[in-house]
Image (cartoon, rainbow, N blue to C red; front, side, top):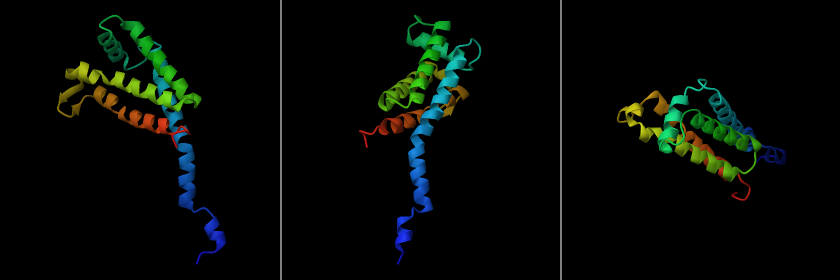
Length: 153
């Protein structure tokens, strides 16, 4: 029979679970915030982002040519920096999740708009397509962030 001292002490596994449970969402927000800020800032400078051409062509296609070139690139930069600031503010988790999910939908459109560039065969994604598909992780992060709101628990 375990002593009362043993039953009151937290096991190593329980301690790890508690610490990771407390740190998980903040670390997720910081990590995503840094990535969004970094990628957004790169788009502020012509030629600095490897995604620049794809962003400009995608925005132009989605706006039927009304927004293109520098305006498209700067719009993407501002939206990504805005998402980063929301993530790093540690406020409005549900709004943050909506912004992330919306961004993922928009950045996924090249998979459909430019299929010849994105797919060489079924399930054979180009490097750009793989870069886009990794955003499925962002969707999962958005769900975790939204569920972190105190009222949801």
